Image 1: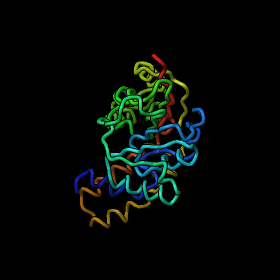
Image 2: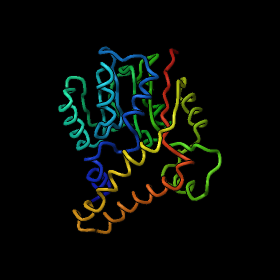
Image 3: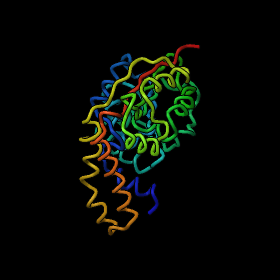
Image 4: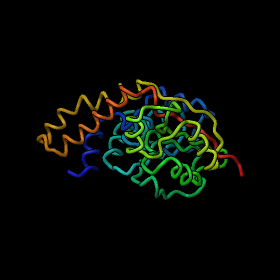
Amino acid sequence: MDLLELIIEYHKDNERQGPGSEEATLKALGYLPYLNEKIKILDVGCGTGGQTITLAKNTGAQITAVDMFPQFLEMLMKKSKVNNLTNRIVAKEMLMESLTFKESSFDVIWSEGAIYNIGFEKGLSLWRKYLKDNGYIAVSEISWLTDTRPDEIVQYWVNAYPEIDTIENKLSVINKCGYTSVAHFVLDDKCWLDNYYQPILERSEAFMKKYDYTDEVKEFVEAGKIEADMYNRFKDYYSYVFYIAKKPVT
């Protein structure tokens, strides 16, 4: 199995493919005006749709959810059906750096734990044209919480995601990309441990067994365990931060 196949198999049955929670989604949503049935939301890198369902249940909006993995979209649409939301959620298989929508199509662009795939600045810059004037963008992005931190965690994350940076610097990027910052807040422990690491780590043994404990599968699972251990040891220094911003009329 190649790495992409492993990622899909390991994560497709999970509620979330990254740190987050219903509470965090709702808190971010609280910084936006009420979204009625005329409003269009684009959920970029939606995964299996944990946040998509929350958005649909708590707004009247029409939601277009995009992801590169059809297996994730299939899970999203199953959830959508169970919740009687198929009339308001459309799933599209698409790369987040190659969206094919018309400019100024959406009132809100949402992306939880996914923008890192193409980079924070690139994502904000690329997606801006799809947002209407006075539209909102809400994204969660891994960020440093302190100005100084231990070398071990710095090396780990700079290796994994070179764009990791302080909240202050992320806010500067938001402004540089042509948005006005509205609010930001840090995701709590529950978003990481209860909702992300615990479910996948609980499945890790069964996952390795399913694939006969091959070296590549063991290495893949071990990398996840190392990441979880890093969070447990160094969570005072970093987290995902939700950033909410507005596209001003130019």
